[in-house]
Structures are given as C-alpha cells and as structure tokens.
Figure 1 (cartoon, one colour):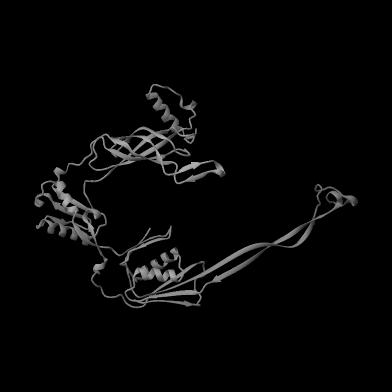
Figure 2 (tube, rainbow, N blue to C red):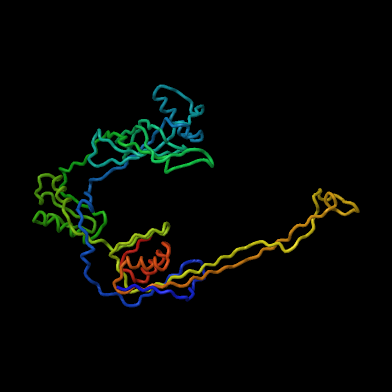
Length: 406
C-alpha cells in the first residue's frame, strides 16, 4: 500500500466559498477475496442477542415536586396550582386555585423502565423532569405519584428527594447554569406494585433476536448452539432471529437452556460501515473498510466582500439653533448665525479573494480507512470536508462499505 501527497498550485474550479472535492477511480475494482480472519472478534451470544418476550417496559407518571427555594413554577403555569389544589382536597383542605401563589412547587413528569421479571416490592430508578417554567428542581422532593404502563394500569409508585447533576443560580445577566437543573434522578425511588414477570416454563421455543441483523452471524449462532448440544436444536429463520427448540435441547429448565446458550463464544465479523453525522461533523469508521485505487483533489477558494462608507465631502446645513429661525440679514441659519457642515458619505466595496493551493492525495490498491484519514489530515481537511470527500468516494464506487449519513 502506498500513500502519496502532492501540493499543486493549480486553481480549483469552484466559484463559491466551499471545499472542492473530486474523486477519480484509477483502475477497476479488485476481485472479491475471502474476508480477513483478523477482522473477526470473539463475543458472547448474550452480548449480541436478546430473548424474545424478555424485555423492559416503559412507565410514565405525573406529579408535584415540593420544597423548592422559590424556583418553582410561576403563576402563569395554571395546571401546577390546579394539581396542588386537588392534592390538598384529598387531604381535607379546600383552597381556591385562583387565590394561591406558591413558588416552591413544580409540576413534573416521571419516567422509569420496568425490567423483566420485576415483582411487587422491587425498586426502580426514576427520572423527574419539569414541564412548567420552574427555574430549578434543586432541593425538591417528589410527592407520591403513580407510574402507568402503556395499557393505562398502575405498575409502580414513586416518591422521594431528587438528586440533580447541575444547578442554576442568579438572574438575568448574572445567572449561571451548570448542566440541567430542571431534570433530576431519584435512585431506587419507585416501588413496583404489579407482578409483570414472564413465565418461562411455558416456552416451547426460545427465540434469540440479533441486535445487529446479519445472516452470517445468525447462521454462526445456530451452528454454535447445535455444536454445543451435539444435535440440531437451533435454526436461523432470517438475519435477525434464531429459534431453539426447548424439547429437542432436553434441558432441565428454560432458564438453564438460555444461560447455556448465552454463554457460548463465537466469532463475529465486523461489518464494513461508515457513519457520518453532517450536523456535528462526527465520523465513525470501521477499520476493515477497504478502498479501491483513488485520487482526491482538495482545494479552497474563499471570497470576501466588505462594504465600507467613506466621506468624500461636506454640505452646509443649519446651525445649532432651531430650524427655520431667521438670522441677521434675513438668511435662515442656526443660533449665532453659524452654519454646520454635514459630511457626504458614499459606500465603497472591497473584494478579497483567497485562493489556496490545491492539495492532492493518492491511495493505491488495498488502502484502508486509517491511511485515508491520515492522508486527509495531512492535507489540512476539516471534519466537514472529510464528510464531503467520503460521500464523493462512495458515490463514485471507490469504497467497499456502507455509508450511513445521519
């Protein structure tokens, strides 16, 4: 593999202020070869799959955070005062929502994840987020609030003091904020009230779902399971699912079967993929991405137009007196009979063009991403320039990888 970089004084053809990228294939694509074993990595089955039917469930609730130091919701957040009045009514105290001004209360949404096999009495971490105009939830305590599942049933109750990862102090120009002061966490702040555990004893088939679908990986998992049990008990249905027969595995329990399968080790080939985020300029590339022989020409042409105003003369106008006053001799002048001069200003436009030398880079047969990145950095490209270059190389066909633009 050979990497060449040259510096040419040829002017780029682009007539706008942006990078010019040209990708040219120098030869035909190489013949298909077997995958390099060095690109494979050993993983546990549990790290790349999940069991169908064994998953988390999302919970959400609404409540009040009290005990704030005057940083709660303001008067215009009507639903906070209404919720407070409803809570007080349940405790036997009647108040009018229109006559209450409380700044140490904030309305919040509560979110949590209910893990599989959660049983009554289990504790969950909950996240509390302000939904009004509260300045900060620092020092607040969440009142007991119900957490609902997608079916509308109550699965947990949350309550407790908040832990914040930031703070907000001061007002106006003297205000200082660190991280988010309107979102807090209550560790182990919710108690599960409903049994949602999955009965594994009724499973006839254990289905493994791949987190990253791939036909080769699915077949490899099925082969590893069959080799472990010395008989065909697993089959790959498609690129994302592998079914294992519980009866054919002859395992004592489904739990032992799943544990035995998830502990298997197999080689997984890392897919050739490049992920590009144009908004942030972030690029993540796999090391096994291969490139065909390619040349890249990169240059910058920047044009700056600046308009300034220049005084070219002056014209007399009325003095410091009131306009229209008649001075001595009948002429209209300001107080004291003195005229003032008003400058005549005209715009003047200056154009500056900065045409940098063109940078070129050549990659020979078998070049990888590491060499490409080093070469692009050597010719002074920015992250956004690298995005444009990768897109041009991929569109031309010189990159044997999937390019995902986010």
